[in-house]
Image (cartoon, rainbow, N blue to C red; front, side):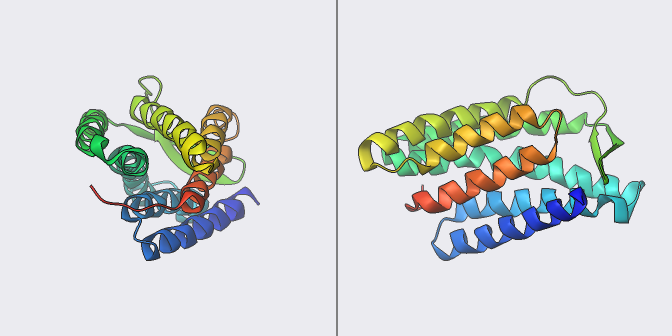
Length: 195
């Protein structure tokens, strides 16, 4: 049952990726592809089974989050103040490097939750710093857009992501659902990419 929900989330996230791409929002579209991939791999994990295939696909999940998630900082800068784009690229790049260094030491182990099988970090090194920094920046950008343009969606999406990420420790699917809400909120906020 839960694996089917992951599959449904993957389809929703992929549809949002297409919508964002059609709107010219390439950064959030790429992030949406990454989270759709993540949901699809978890949803299909029990069908794939334990072994090197699922481990390789799971390594891709971690890499997608490491490389793509910080790019949302650039998208937030474009929405709020284009003068911040260069600094946003610098911060996003630093966070990507930070996460990439962590990937070099990544050791995965299989873990079952409900009817899903996924590979998780065998020795997590603490909170996901890049994801937290990105979420805080999205919250701040969301407040600015809410005040300036009277559009609360980015703030609300980032707040839902923050809440669901914490709850995902006990219910992992909530993290993926929170990512879908954030991507939908970015689509509802609109705007343009660039930088």
